[in-house]
Image (cartoon, rainbow, N blue to C red):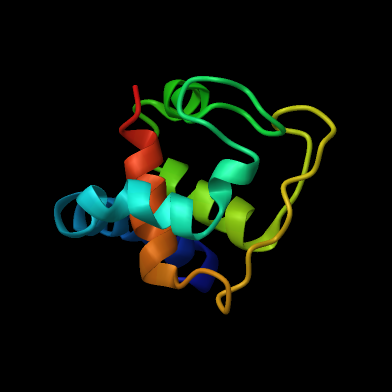
Length: 112
Protein backbone atom coordinates (compact mmCIF):
# COMPACT_ATOMS: atom_id res chain seq x y z
CA UNK A 1 0.00 0.00 0.00
CA UNK A 2 1.51 3.32 -0.99
CA UNK A 3 2.08 6.13 1.49
CA UNK A 4 -0.58 8.47 0.06
CA UNK A 5 -3.26 5.76 0.17
CA UNK A 6 -2.34 4.86 3.77
CA UNK A 7 -2.52 8.53 4.74
CA UNK A 8 -5.89 8.91 3.01
CA UNK A 9 -7.27 5.89 4.84
CA UNK A 10 -5.70 6.51 8.23
CA UNK A 11 -6.31 10.26 8.64
CA UNK A 12 -10.12 9.98 9.12
CA UNK A 13 -9.60 7.07 11.55
CA UNK A 14 -7.05 9.07 13.54
CA UNK A 15 -9.37 12.08 13.63
CA UNK A 16 -12.25 9.92 14.87
CA UNK A 17 -10.06 8.34 17.54
CA UNK A 18 -8.87 11.74 18.71
CA UNK A 19 -12.44 13.03 18.81
CA UNK A 20 -13.74 10.02 20.74
CA UNK A 21 -10.87 10.21 23.23
CA UNK A 22 -11.34 13.95 23.69
CA UNK A 23 -15.09 13.62 24.02
CA UNK A 24 -14.92 10.99 26.72
CA UNK A 25 -11.77 12.08 28.50
CA UNK A 26 -11.60 15.82 28.23
CA UNK A 27 -14.86 17.31 26.97
CA UNK A 28 -15.84 18.48 30.45
CA UNK A 29 -12.61 20.45 30.52
CA UNK A 30 -13.21 22.02 27.10
CA UNK A 31 -14.78 25.21 28.36
CA UNK A 32 -12.00 25.75 30.90
CA UNK A 33 -9.40 25.11 28.21
CA UNK A 34 -10.83 27.64 25.74
CA UNK A 35 -10.92 30.22 28.53
CA UNK A 36 -7.38 29.44 29.69
CA UNK A 37 -6.07 29.50 26.11
CA UNK A 38 -7.84 32.86 25.62
CA UNK A 39 -9.87 31.59 22.65
CA UNK A 40 -12.71 33.67 24.09
CA UNK A 41 -10.86 36.84 23.09
CA UNK A 42 -12.02 36.16 19.51
CA UNK A 43 -14.84 33.60 19.90
CA UNK A 44 -18.03 33.14 21.92
CA UNK A 45 -20.47 30.25 22.16
CA UNK A 46 -23.39 31.88 20.37
CA UNK A 47 -22.23 35.26 19.06
CA UNK A 48 -19.77 36.21 16.35
CA UNK A 49 -16.83 38.23 17.61
CA UNK A 50 -13.61 38.52 15.63
CA UNK A 51 -14.11 34.88 14.68
CA UNK A 52 -17.21 32.73 14.32
CA UNK A 53 -19.36 31.59 17.23
CA UNK A 54 -18.65 28.07 18.44
CA UNK A 55 -22.24 27.14 17.55
CA UNK A 56 -21.60 28.24 13.94
CA UNK A 57 -18.46 26.12 13.81
CA UNK A 58 -20.31 23.11 15.23
CA UNK A 59 -23.14 23.53 12.71
CA UNK A 60 -20.76 23.89 9.76
CA UNK A 61 -18.86 20.72 10.64
CA UNK A 62 -21.75 18.63 11.99
CA UNK A 63 -21.39 15.01 10.87
CA UNK A 64 -17.97 15.59 9.30
CA UNK A 65 -15.59 12.94 10.60
CA UNK A 66 -12.63 14.93 9.28
CA UNK A 67 -13.60 18.09 11.20
CA UNK A 68 -11.54 17.47 14.36
CA UNK A 69 -8.33 17.00 12.35
CA UNK A 70 -9.12 19.94 10.04
CA UNK A 71 -9.85 22.26 12.95
CA UNK A 72 -6.77 21.06 14.83
CA UNK A 73 -4.66 21.98 11.82
CA UNK A 74 -6.41 25.35 11.39
CA UNK A 75 -5.94 26.34 15.04
CA UNK A 76 -2.38 25.05 15.25
CA UNK A 77 -1.18 26.64 11.98
CA UNK A 78 -3.61 29.52 11.46
CA UNK A 79 -5.14 30.56 8.15
CA UNK A 80 -7.95 32.54 6.59
CA UNK A 81 -10.78 32.32 4.11
CA UNK A 82 -13.20 29.95 5.86
CA UNK A 83 -15.03 32.66 7.83
CA UNK A 84 -14.09 35.83 5.98
CA UNK A 85 -10.83 37.66 5.55
CA UNK A 86 -9.82 38.01 9.20
CA UNK A 87 -7.09 35.41 9.72
CA UNK A 88 -7.06 32.79 12.44
CA UNK A 89 -3.71 33.26 14.16
CA UNK A 90 -1.51 30.22 14.71
CA UNK A 91 -1.58 28.74 18.22
CA UNK A 92 1.67 26.80 18.71
CA UNK A 93 2.11 23.87 21.09
CA UNK A 94 3.87 26.06 23.64
CA UNK A 95 0.61 28.05 23.98
CA UNK A 96 -1.87 25.14 23.98
CA UNK A 97 -0.90 21.47 24.19
CA UNK A 98 -2.09 18.90 21.66
CA UNK A 99 -4.27 17.25 24.32
CA UNK A 100 -5.85 20.55 25.36
CA UNK A 101 -6.42 21.59 21.76
CA UNK A 102 -8.06 18.25 20.98
CA UNK A 103 -10.32 18.60 24.02
CA UNK A 104 -11.21 22.19 23.15
CA UNK A 105 -12.15 21.19 19.60
CA UNK A 106 -14.33 18.34 20.88
CA UNK A 107 -16.07 20.79 23.21
CA UNK A 108 -16.59 23.33 20.41
CA UNK A 109 -18.01 20.72 18.05
CA UNK A 110 -20.51 19.69 20.73
CA UNK A 111 -21.93 23.25 20.98
CA UNK A 112 -24.83 22.58 18.56
